Length: 396
Image (cartoon, rainbow, N blue to C red; front, top):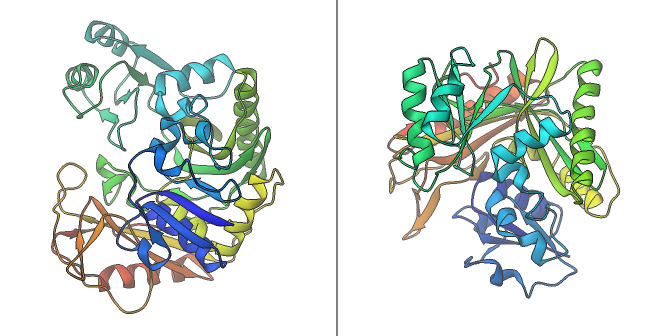
């Protein structure tokens, strides 16, 4: 069996690295400068590039765009949901209405389809105000603002397509909940699921959870939780998959619940129909062979549980200006040793240069969280490029 990984970020590099480590032939579409170390990169020019792949191979979408585009509708050997089920991520409006329809715990919400509706519905909430774009926005579609007028101004621009390029349409106004965020990711086949070890990620750009939201500045795991909370999270997965079945669909692939633990109760903030980034890097590093076995078993409809072999910490190195206008084209100097997953990196004239906002994932593993954290930060300090930025409180 060959494995075809779709995407170009650190998540895709981590998945491909794990399969390569287990002896599989790995191909990336399109991959990045680092994935070439662990497989073969191919140009990606739409789904037609995949139609002739053998049905005996495994197609593993990393990024949601491939699923929204319909890769699982085209090929049966895709570990990912069909386009219709992928709406759980591609439309925040659909996802919130789905949760309401099937009694799935989520923050109170309203939908605004124009600025006048937004003005009216903001009055039903207290600050800070949470406004979410309906469609895919590459990690930039959630606004958290303290003032009602600012919320109206930015939310109106989001609706009218003036805030984020390519993003336009209705928005969701969510109740702001305090508590602890937690990533719950499972492999799924039909109504059966197996939850990966829990991971905590850090969305804000700066230490102390300050600054704008990003795609993720780091993560660590495993996070231990109480059995009572685990049971409630399992119920959220079960009810979600029951709802998918009631919609006349079958789900296969990764399912991600972005959770807020508020007063001991898990609330779903968002669905993702693929594994998380940077959570995948941590899950893979905790047990690469276990990750591969868990995915392959779920693809066949046999659920296995991934047991962590160690703690893992991911410190993301980003480029100055991220998430809006990251500095690009700066040469990267790498240490000889250490596990690093590549993201926004290109190779030019035999040298690595920055080519995106999140550049590298510096991984540390150890018998304790502190040991893993120490190794991740030693690696982060050893990497050099102009404009390097990173949080210093991951797993602290």
